[in-house]
Length: 182
Image (tube, rainbow, N blue to C red):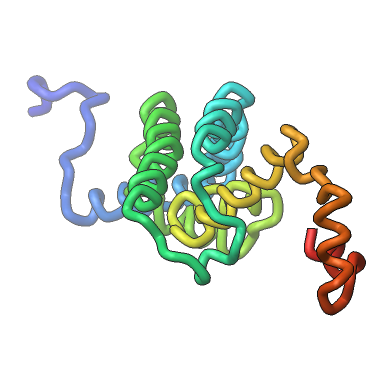
């Protein structure tokens, strides 16, 4: 008799039903991947967070030389700065996942597939995250920030004095070559 068992009791779990549940959860994760990525992108594009990243980069950018990153010695400090930069993004992503109650490892494959097959509006997210992961892209980003900072501070607008121009006229190419260098 069924007296001890409720009519609405959950069925017993078997390997077969557990497999179906995992497959259903996986299918749901696949459908949610684009939505999750869109919300993550919006979360990373939050103005307050972007200002935090910009302020951090502005503070440290003058340490980076103008030459291509493969043309200069890389001090250990740059590796430390790259790690700090990564932590900004990783911390923000972790915060998002925690607030959303998402187990990232459970949907990671689906998200990677989504990014690979349909990068479209996620390009900015991919670029910012890859810059946080790739050291040379990070160096290039910091150089771009330095160029903007120099422009904002009027440093790139400085012209050589008349004396410098006269000196350069005697050199091959004259003043035109000196102006082209600046």
